[in-house]
Amino acid sequence: MQATLAQIANLVDGRLVGRDDLVIHGAASLRDAGPGEITLIDGQEKSCNLAACRASAVIVPKVFNSNGLPAVQVDDVHCAFAAILTYFHPRRQEKRIGLSPLAAISPTARLAEDVDVHPLATIGDEVTIAAGSTIHSGVHIMAGCKIGQHVTIFPNAVLYENTVVGSRSVIHAGAVLGAYGFGYCQVEGRHKLSAQLGNVVLGPDVEIGACTTIDRGTYGPTVVGEGTKIDDLVMIAHNCRIGRHNMLCSQVGIAGSTTTGDHVVMAGQVGVRDHVHIGTGAVVGAKTGIINDVPDGRRMIGIPATPEREQKLKLAALSKLPEMRRQMKKLQQTVDALVQEADNCKLRIENCKLKIVKRDPSPTQNASD
Picture 1: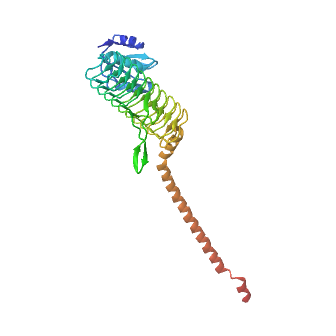
Picture 2: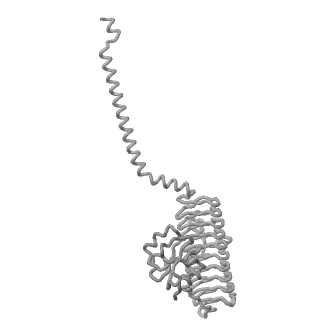
Picture 3: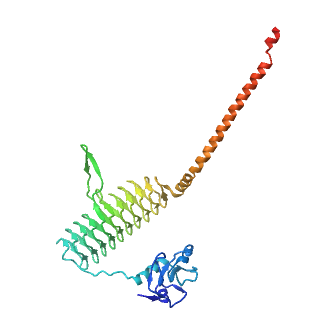
């Protein structure tokens, strides 16, 4: 597979700078690209990296100086580069296989005609799967689940009973939806599991990362709103209500009965306590610990979470502690010296008073003389 730089510019509707007959046979990132390949740079501040670049051409933003390297200028560098990479390395097209005879499908399950179920998948009683969905090997969908149109469930994911998955959603390998919530009460000194009567409901266009777990609600559903994207290794506990178009990065942990508004972003390893609300448009930085409600639009970082500006001021002050400690030691030494000097002055004054008393006899002594 190869193309001229002119053909690539035409593919991405870009402006060609340099030789139009330059032959390109591949695409790679700036670090990995070699001769005959095209790479990308997404900002003028990174132009210094071109000096060590071995690629033959580069995709750049408009009004970008490529320092003589043949270039294609575009509005959206990443979108254009993705199109070029797909041209050189087309995605594999999966063949429709229908219902594999090696899959275990309950006779009471209702599957649309163009659903694919791969070998060793298990479909439970009264499950419904809408048109265009793909169930990969090792997936276990338990009784009463409802799967929307064009859903993809990758190998070894598990959906407990009555889980609902909205259309066009993607569930990656090893995810578990609908496991029992971590809720117990004490009965005669023993932990007794509380009611686990709810389920999990995903809206349309939701993506669930590999090995992510979402627990069922106690009495009602645990809900993930439309368009929300959840990374790998995320934990969402029972009764949570996650809003629309949230972004939850890897290793986020959300305790029970927490709610979020729309367009919330949580960076990696954020921890959220139970029964709090994170407002619409809030952004929570990596490793932040949320212990109270977060207002709409607020940016929070730190443990415990505080507004971003306030936390940065604290961190700036914290970074100055070693210097402040040195200054305090010097100040203490100065104060100690001043105290010592004051004590010495006081002693000298007392000595002077004693000498004056010895030199001047008292009035009574003069009278007797």
